[in-house]
Figure 1 (spheres, rainbow, N blue to C red):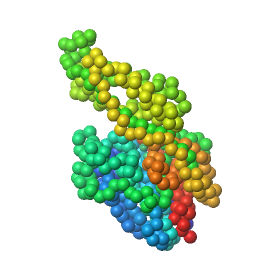
Figure 2: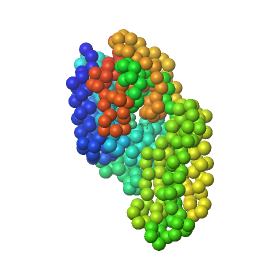
Figure 3: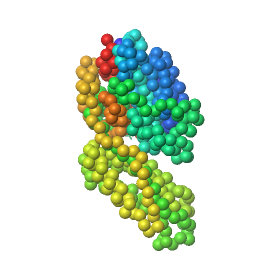
Figure 4: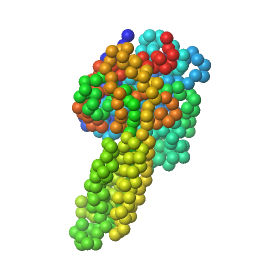
Amino acid sequence: MKANKERIETHISDLSAFTATPNQGVTRLTYSKEDVQARKYIKAKMNEYGLDVREDGLGNIFGKLQGTKKDAPSVLVGSHFDSVPHGGAYDGPSGVVAGLEVAALFQEKNLTPTYPLEIIAMIEEEGARFGGGLMGSRGITGTTDAEELNHTKDKDGVSVAEAMRDIGLDPTLSKQRDPQTIKAFLEMHIEQGPVLEEKDIAIGVVEGIVGLSQLEVTIQGQAGHAGTTPMDRRSDALVTAANIIAKLPAIAAEEGEGTVITVGRHEVFPNGANVIPEKVIFSVDIRAGKEEHMQSAIQKTKDFITSFEGQGMQISMEQSLYMQPKTLNQHIHSLLQNACNQLDISYLPMNSGAGHDAMVFADVTDVGLIFVPSKDGISHAPEEWTDTKDLANGADVLFQTAMKLTETT
Ligand code: HGY
Ligand code: MN
Ligand code: MN
């Protein structure tokens, strides 16, 4: 018996309906109404598949299938269920759905594992509400301490704890999990790039994940009247920000080796057509395959931005995320490749230009990450799409690998 395509298709389509922007992609921010709808759906399916369901002190959802080995560490399988604004239906949910399908197959085959199997659906991987990103997995692994989380607020000043309480979650529950309780973490994710589709290969077996960092830059100038303020007496924050942003791609090009720099979000205050912009806040997303290029690109970016300080401009920067490049576990990598061979599914060892919860878990346990093809390589957009047969292939590979890691016969 193999993964059930209809069941997978239904999960993806039902979850994609939980969006704040219907017909304009999936927008599902953490602890939003749409989060609550998706959370309810995921927990109901975990119950249906015979799992013991709980939520931790950040609202990450765990569905556990007990093993025969007492107090043994669990094999976790899952991904995140939040989205970027106007994103797609597959980024995150495809990995949660693959986990649900693995649990459904264990139930259908009446399998009891030696080591427990836990399906996991994590919050705030994208950072679209609270900034930074990977918050759910960083909370579980302790790379985000409780103190930092207590200070984290969204752009309306709502803290994580308040937002959790608003939807009936308990922020006082434990967040960090003892690494001794985790045997391995497996994640399926859409590739979000064109490689697998172009090469007509079904599965990417990920070897390494790029390092990524996010800066939050604030340019403070002086508001003024657009009509009466002479051009030589302005401290226009938006002109300064534009001069900075226009030059950042050159820093990435100069660093080379696949280094990328993106300004994806910016806010102008007070944002009036006839008001000289007083303040601009913008994000800078920096990624590179090697640590030295990460460090160098970040420093060059910070130095360049700081060089605009003065002439009425104040500049401040915060680093909201820093993840080193990660190499994933060789043993699990081989298990995933063996599963592809046994299932006669084509695969390609590859690296990831996107960040994933798997890179956070790699600090505390053995990790495996597989990709499934993205149509036209598009992601973080409503056009994001993956064929159900590819999702089912991925679920079959994860099921085989989870059977091995949980020592289920
Ligand atoms: O930004 C990323 O790489 C991921 O989609 N959060
Ligand atoms: Mn994403
Ligand atoms: Mn993702």
